[in-house]
Figure 1 (spheres, rainbow, N blue to C red):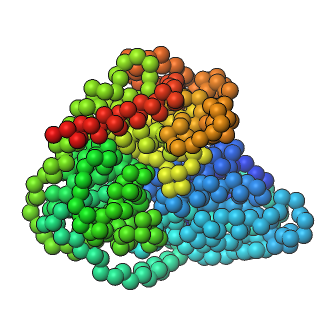
Figure 2: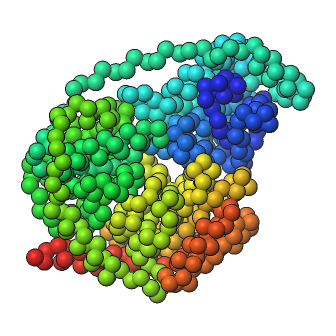
Figure 3: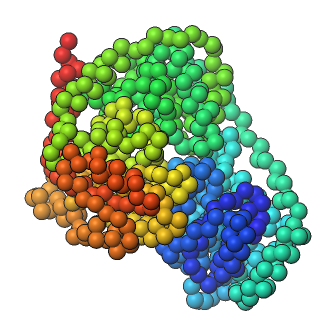
Length: 563
C-alpha cells in the first residue's frame, strides 16, 4: 500500500505505534531505510496528525499519518477538521479489524470508518476481509484515487482523505519476509494505474468589476497549495496596478509587502474613515478575523465579488457577495486591460497611524502584547516565517505589527480557529521549511505540550516565543461580565499552575526568560542561534494589555479625525 502511495508522490509519513498497523509500520521502516520515505514517529495520534498537517502546509504535498485501530482514529478528527477548513492535503491511513471481527464485541473494534467522514474530501476502504486480499492494481487504484482527492482540482479544494484498511492476522512478518515481499512488489509493480481526472464542474462566467471606479481589495488567509502561491500573488499585483484600489490584507494572506496600495493599519482605519456605500469590493478567500471589517463591509451597497482558490463552499458569512471558485489568476485573465492607477489617499492616513503607534506603544520596560507584536515584526529576519497561534497573537499581529508584519510569510491555522495542535503544527512547518518562529499564548502551548516530543525528530529549528499572560488573554478583550475577577478566571481565563520553562526543560528544550523589552533583541538572537527547538518566555499582564489596546485604538481614531 505504501509503495503505491510512494509512486504517487508521497514523500513524508508520520507513524503512530500499534499492533494492527504493524504491516504498515514495517513497510514504512523499509522504505525509510532505502531512502524512499522521510519517516517521523509520534506516540500521540492527535499531535501526530497536526504535525503532518504542518508539513503538508509547508510543502504543498500530502503527508500520511498511520495509526492503529480504535480510539487512535478518533484522535485524528481535530486535525482533519482543520485540514478541511484550511484546504490542505492530508492522508489518514488507519488500520482496522477485518469484517469477521466487527460488531461482535471484539477488542479494540469500533465504527472507526465513520469517525472522520464529515471532515474528509473522500473516505475509502480496503477489502473488508483484509488488505492481503487486494490485487496489486487495486492497491494502486486506491492510492491514486486517495492522492488525487487529497490534492483537489480547479473546482474542489485540497483537503483530508481517510483510507481505512482492515488487516487479518498474522499481523507481523519476519524481517526476511518483509524484505522479500518489498523486493517482489518493486519488481512486479508497473507505474500506478492512471485514474481519469474527475470532470470539473462547469463554472459560470465570473462577475466583472470596473477598475476605473472606486473599490477595495480584501485579502483573507491564503488557502491554496504552495505551488499556486506565485501565480496568485502575481494576479493580485496585476489587479492592484490596474485599479489603484487599496489592499486590506490579512497577515495570513501570503501577499508581498510591496504590493501597491497595501495598508498596514487598515483595521484601525475602519473605525474612522467614511466610505461611499457604492464602493466595489473584491474579496479573496475567507474573511479576515476582524469584526470591524465585517461590520464595515455589511453597510456597503456596491458589488462584492468573492474569489476562492477552488473551494466551492460558501465563504461569505455576510451573505453579500457573489462567489466564484475559479481562482484569482483565471478571473484576472477575463478582465479588461488597464493602466497603472494612482495610489489611494488612504495610504497617507495609514502612514499617519503608523507614526502615531510608534510614539504611543512602549518600546521599553515591562513587556506588553501590542509592543511585542510591533517589535517582533521588526526584529525578526525577513526570511524567517512566523506562525501565529489562533488566538490573541494572530489578532495582535494584524492590528499592531505594522509594515514589519507584512515582510514575511505568516501562518496560522484558522480554518477552524482552534488552539489544539499549535506546537505540533509549528514543528511540522519547521521540519519542511527550516527556521521558523512560533508566537503563542500559554494556554495554546500547554494544550499541545506533547508537541515537544517531536523535537527528537531531526531537531526542527523552531523558536517558540511564549507570551505568558497567565490564562486566556483573548477573553479579556471581549464583553464578558462575571460576578468577580476570580469568577472570570475560573470560567474563562483558566490560568494554570504549570511552569512552562520546567516543562520544556523536561523535554530537553533550551529555555530563556525575558526580563524586559530592552532585552528582546539579544533574546531573539539567542533563540535563532539554537540548533533545534528553543523556548523564549515573555510574561505580560492581560488586564493591563486589554486596557492598552483600547487606549491605542482611541488615540488612532483621534489622529484620523484630526485634519
